[in-house]
Length: 287
Image (cartoon, rainbow, N blue to C red):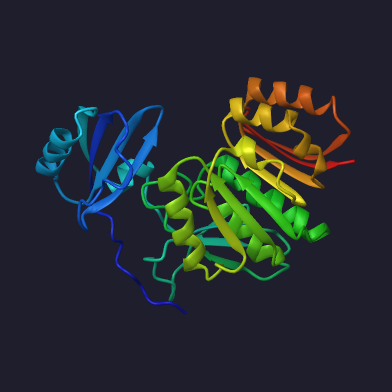
C-alpha cells in the first residue's frame, strides 16, 4: 500500500501569449509548471502569480505579445477533481491519492471479476488526458480486449498526451511502446508518468509529428488524435503494416469518414464504441 502525497497543484496562473518562446528560454524558477505551445501561441502555467516574470520575458523577446491571463483552480482546469478511477481491470490514480482504506469509483468494471487489477500512477500536470474522457475509456477497454486475445509486443501511441495509453499497453502485455506527441509539454508529462510507473526500459516518449512516425515498425498503433491527422495516418503505407489498430477521438461525422476510408482497405473492425452518439472509437485488425 502506498501512503498519500500532497497534490502539488493548487491555483494555476496562466499567461496566454501570441508567439512562441525562443528555445531554451524558460528559466522561470520552481513556480513554473510548463509551456503549452500550439498554432503559434503559448500558454505559460505557474503555481504563483508571475506578472513580473512575464514582463521581463516580453521585454527580452519582443516577438511575444500578452493576450490574456487567467487564475483558476487545478480542478477547474481539468473540469473536475483528478481522482482515482477504475476502467475495467485498470486502476488509474494520481500519485497524491491515498490508497490505504480508499474506495474508488468503478467505471465499466468487469462483472465476473476475473483478472488482477493493474495499478497505474498518472500525474497529468496541466496536460489533458487523465483518463476521464470517454475516448480514453474506449482505448483502455480496447487494449484489455486485445491483450486478452493476443500479445502485441511493439506498440506506437500517436498523440500520447500524458502517456497513459502507452503505459497501459506496457503494463498489460509487457510490451515495448513508443509514445509520440508534437507538443513538448505533453512529452515531458509522458516521461514523468513513464518514470512514475518504472517503465523507462519499456516506454520511450518522443516529440514529433505523428505522420512521420506511423511507418515505425510496430504490431499495434494507437491513435487518439485529431481527425485531420488521423485521416492522413490511415492513408499512409505504414498503417497497413500493423497487425492491429485502435483509433479514437472522433466525433460522429468524422467517424463516418474514417469508416469509409477503412472499408477501402483489407482491415476488419473488431469492435466499435459510440458514447452517447458523440464520441467514436475503433479496435481493428489488418488482414
